[in-house]
Amino acid sequence: MKRIQRRRGLALAASVAGLGLVLTACSDGGDGGGGGGDEAAATFDCADYEQYGDLEGKTVSVYTSIVDPEAQEQEASYEPFEECTRAEIEYEGSREFEAQLPVRLEAGNPPDIAYIPQPGFLRSLVQDFPDAVQAAPQSVIDNANEYYTEGWVEYGTVDGTLYATPLGANVKSFVWYSPSAFEENGYEVPTTWQELLDLTDQMVEDNPDIKPWCAGIESGDATGWPATDWLEDVVLRTAGPEVYDQWVNHEIPFDDPQIVEALDAVGGILKNEDYVNGGLGDVASIASAPWNEAGNGIPDGTCFLHRAANFYQANWDEGLEVAEDGDVYAFYLPGESEEDKPLLGGGEFVTAFSDREEVQAFHAYLSSPQWANAKAEVTGQGWISANSGLDRELLQSPIDQLSFDLLTDETYTFRFDGSDQMPGSVGAGSFWREMVSWISPGQDSQTTLSNIEASWPSS
Image (cartoon, rainbow, N blue to C red; front, side):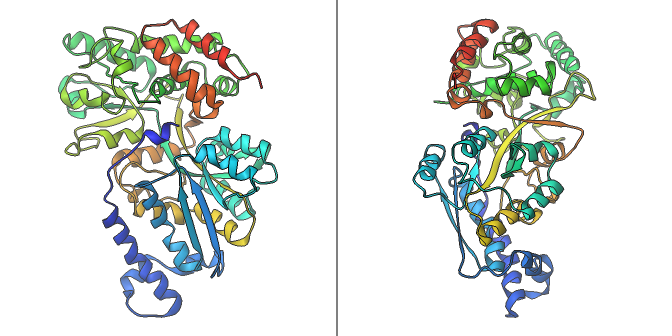
């Protein structure tokens, strides 16, 4: 899936050390032992964890696709819960998670908790293993309703029952740019789709030797996925969220005329030789340009704009400052009007396969601001949560803080990554492949979408 393409450097040791200071207060506060100090006790208080009960001797197993180095951050974020409840969390990360989880359920060997990376996968698990997937307890329902927007709650709901709550999140509706290049050229951040196109034309006129946009969709076995993000974002803007939902759920054909129109709109940028591919070549070069390097033209001065998610920040040179007045930053990919605010993103969801007391308590913790803040404390840049109780000041970069603001703003209409909700043979198969063909050798939009429609499973 797309999320496995994201990797970042970590300053984990320092972050965990900081949380360790906090944990001293937790253990000392519970038993009255020495060493924590008043300052630490004020930072962290085990009284906040009394709601979960005394779980000494209890163990909760967690199974996920999140592996090192991110797994280290995950485990560090559980320490407050473990210290204060005296439960033990057994963590297992696997690159074969999506293939192996159904096997384990079929064999009657489920984990207590799993982190599901797509709503579509959750729905299939509930359908195929209705006795294994546990409905969320009231404590989790209460957290979901209080701390997450309605859209996020719906993605964890199947047939009216809440099963899963969000864990991490990301925002994909961003365009990266150079603040200094904008200032030097007198460019303003666009607030509508038409303003974005007008800005692109102005860049062409002002800079005949520089292409405005740079793009790349090469990603090894996952080549093509960045192009699917482009289409999903534009469907939300040209056809709207309701049509997007119908398309993702195959209630309308993949090649519905509204989707053809959206892909043609994407082509208005990515297939326009006047617009692309800054510093990398012609239109065809998009297919072979590595997605994680394609934005380098912005600091190099060979392009002005690059559409990519918040986690793209991990790919900038370490010497670059990511900030509104820094070397690189990102603005929200605008809608048709300033009032039209669709937002594309993704994330993982916490799902339980046991209703034991300790499992319900840990699920409640993971859906709470306590966990979101503990995770932020031990995480470098590139991680955010949609939990409105998260202290945004704990987030490690301005783009993370901006992403959090968008995710928790009810005026934005959030939609989960479309390909991540589609059958795997489509979302991670024909959709990727056909978008590559659409770029190079330049297959037309109708043929591209009709080929994907023909690949949709019949059942």
